Length: 265
Ligand code: SF4
Ligand code: MG
Image (cartoon, rainbow, N blue to C red; front, side, top):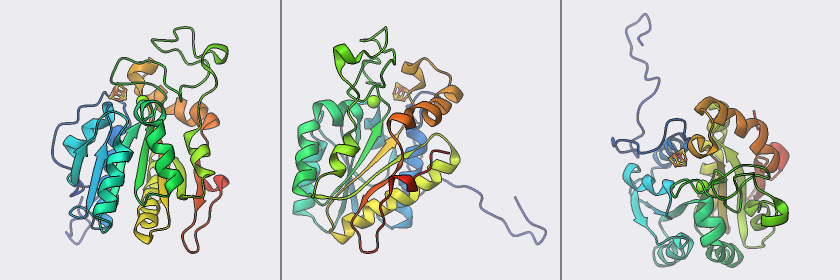
């Protein structure tokens, strides 16, 4: 697009921290949006050479193929343990994990909880879509009540499986947690708001305030059996009722924390 004076205006361009590789995710999966937002934060904070991303196992592992910062693929559920070692040895780096709900809320629950309790100075980006995506759509600890999965075809039943676990709410109660927030990717507005929150989490880490975590609500249209458009609407209308967005803990100097500050629009 060129204005009358002929000067080019750059409306959108690929972030420098995003490699020109083919995305591997299904149509309508919001992992691609989340990834672009994270890459833009890395660019804004000039972290490409000064950060390490540790991923768990799942569809989110493909971040390794796409993000242009330093990367490490951990064993299933062990990303927090690996990130602990990296941050303690190289405290000058910004270290963050990318973990799905199967990886973080089931297999890696122990690592996640104890890292928060110890106040480890790295950041967790928790990609919650309420289902095991890569392995075929099985029920996870964060699956909504009544949601059908391949291991709960009649929908999640609390008598059999208990209620969904709100990992962020639990971790927000820990003294070692310096920053805890939940964001979503289901519309342009909330994705833009999420960018500021992820940046705040990285700033928390740089300030050495404590453990930092951002839960990112994502879609899985393939295993939810919804169209991409309907999956986006489902997050905005239903998922946020179980998992409201907002900043729950912000111990930075001058930081404010209020779940009501979040927007589900
Ligand atoms: Fe995304 Fe689900 Fe497809 Fe995995 S299976 S890429 S989470 S839509
Ligand atoms: Mg998942």
